[in-house]
Image (cartoon, rainbow, N blue to C red):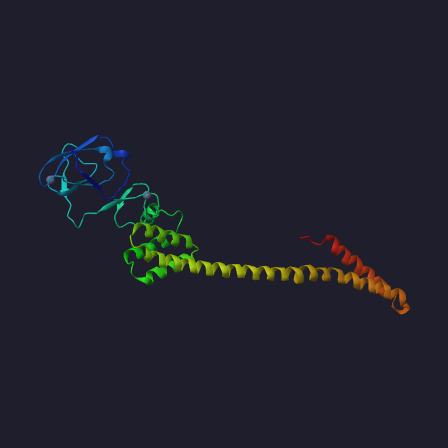
Length: 264
Ligand SMILES: [Zn+2]
Ligand SMILES: [Zn+2]
């Protein structure tokens, strides 16, 4: 006979060195019922059991110093460490732990996401929706949830949850008022976004036309014009022959700049 509940304190898997005995026989310290547990089910240095007969909670040290007479001891409720298994990897660990010590998942969040019908939504929003379920008549909580959905760009999640809820409860009108509110805000937001996009487009065009193409062209070709003027001026005025040299120098410099400038 095997105890129904096997609980282990540490949840360690390190039993390489102790697997010499295949079965452990031991008695409940209260009612002395004899139990047998296969050694490969024991995953702790202090496995704990609950006697199905008298509900006594007891444990023993593993591996036992004498396998033939395993000494068991009672575990008081204060000492008892209720354990839970990770929903993802099923590793058994302390109840108080929030992050699985084996696979590193946040267990509560993992469960929430598993139970959520809507694909890929943040845990924060799932929790926010749960608050609505707990206190449905409080409009403030609804507003908080809807605000969050808008902020996190998950308006469709809000619509989905209210529609789903509407199908499940008989009084659909209460969800419909929230749905129409969401749709109104959604429409307003879409208009605002469209307007902003147009404004951005205009601004971008403005930049393109004035700042870049025109200004750049002027910056590139102005030295060439100045150089041409200097050369012409040098030919026309005898006392300013020097400006021919300066003009040619400037011309070569700016043509070289034009030829090798970065194209984009
Ligand atoms: Zn017992
Ligand atoms: Zn895990």
